[in-house]
Image (cartoon, rainbow, N blue to C red; front, side):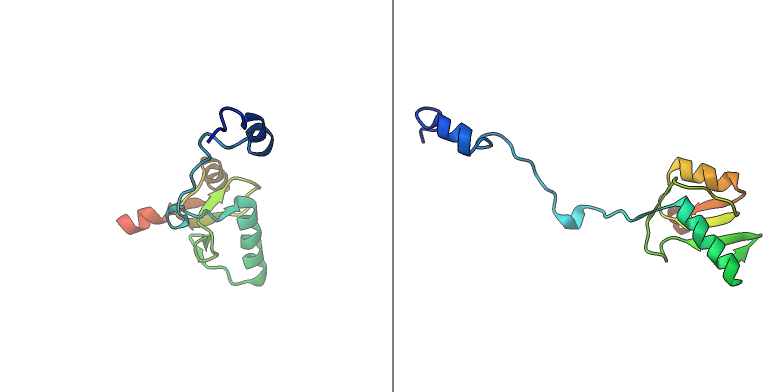
Length: 115
């Protein structure tokens, strides 16, 4: 081929990535897509449900299922001001702390299926 000899300068100038590994992309069907929502946005949804007058409640906690909203993970950005019972497949520790500090609770869907 000659790229290590007399064509070396051509390779350095026009094809610097000629040698070496160039990465691997996994097939999209095996990569899980994460749709996330912050607890501050969930708090806004709870406030909206309270203002419309038809929230689903259990023990004075507003029940919100994030899978029905199209999300599969809850993140800890924002504040929680109302007690919420949150049903989610995945949640961060910070988000869990904020919800429990406001008097709410978190139910993981994996716990629901195991009962």
